[in-house]
Amino acid sequence: MRSLRVLLLSVVATSLMAGPALACGGLVAPNGSVNLVRTTTLAAYVDGVEHYVTSFEFAGAGGGKFGSIVPLPDIPTDVTKAGRWTLQRLVEEVQPPELFVSRNAAFAVAEDKAEVIIEKRVSALDIAVLKGGGDEVGTWAKENGFFLPPDAPELLDFYAERSPIFMAVRFNLERAQDKDLQSGDGIPVHVTIPTDSPWVPLRILGLGRGADEIVEADVFLLNETEPMLMPGMDEAGSGEGLVHERSEPASEALLTDLAGDRGMGWLPTDDMWLDYIRIETGAANLDHDLAISVDGEVPSPVDAGYALAGTTIPQRDSTPIWGWFVGVAMLVVVLMGSNFLVSWKR
Amino acid sequence: MEAMTIALRLGLVMAALMLGGCALAAEAREAEVIVNVNHSRFDPASFEFETGTTVRFVIHNGDPIDHEFLLGDEADQERHENGTHAEHGAIPGEVSLPAGSTQSTTYTFTEPGKLIIGCHLPAHFAYGMRADVTVTP
Image (cartoon, rainbow over all chains, first blue to last red; front, side):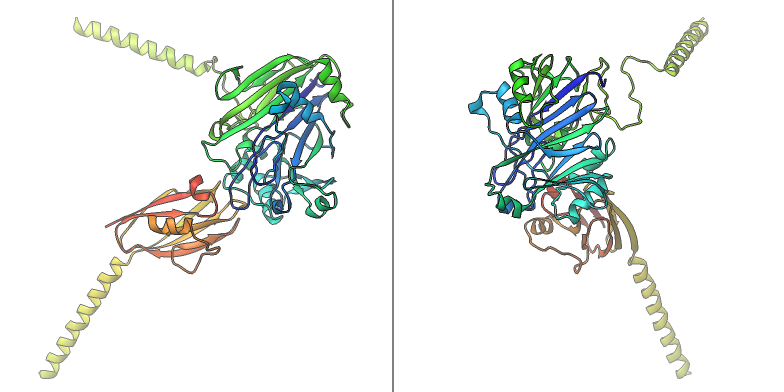
């Protein structure tokens, strides 16, 4: 799997009204209301390293209590400022530029008794990579002044069961003012994550949303080979849900543009496969993530969030051996019973 | 003889008072109920008590976020949903639940009917953080 190069591009689009915006998550205001903007995220998997690029949008001085939580599949080795046009170029590849609204929403952050693995300043962003269970991360967030909606405890536990790594992001208002950031300005972040199990967090997009509220997101994948994905998706042009809009070789023009951006030199400039998945579904339906396999194996249900790590996933076609014994025993009983009835009638 | 009659009458009165006291004590039932809060849900999510029961609710908030335990009828829940009280604890049946804490509140169910236990921090009640209480005659 490490020999395969995989690039996962997830451009998550949500819409924001009054607050800040985050890349791959939900935006939560102190009063519990949630406004989301289209969020742009890139997760790239090359030689066993996932490159996760996302952008956080400044919401102005009033957005100080907004934060973002991004579940990560493993412990990152670095967090840096990302390139200047990578996310925009990806969206442009699949959408007419005039229809694209590039915004990134910031999520509610988490951390408390959790272990802070990495602390980093990226422009006006304060970033902490946390390791801990759902309660620990939630407690950290609360103690650090972040607001968490009522579904946060369950969501944090959901992700911590698979990977107790979270990235908490918040704007530093003083530095934002020093840099003359205006509301709506975005800061892209590149997270480098060596991992054997790349996945794209989707369920967190519903954080703080009502069950019927629609989650909109665009997820892009780039692999050296056509990947296998879980869950299965609707075909292009179908209705709501996860719609597989594109699955095709990535153009050299796209790859060259991306690789030319700051910090994107690791990206191959040819022989990559592009997938574009459009998400438009009720938050209650988005109870899973997106698992990707590039080694010919069926993607892991655990990585897709359908099962906890360590549990056995029953195969639909496999009948347990005891089932055969029970079946045979029932058949014998029926035959014996019918013989009894025949002899009794006689 | 008259003194004996008076003593007898006093004894009867005292016996009657004692019996009445016992009867009152029998009607004043008391109970302690443990309630857990996890993933912004009350567990158990429904309760049933007899009228006249005084219940001490011991509530453990296992979540990393704050919650509330507010017992009352529909009108009370509506009032709390639109209210601005940041802290609860002075009124029986109402208590704030800081993250990870265990709190208690005592409430006497004086008449049959349906009540609700709810949390009215922003978005919590709409999320489903409520429990139903049935008070039987």
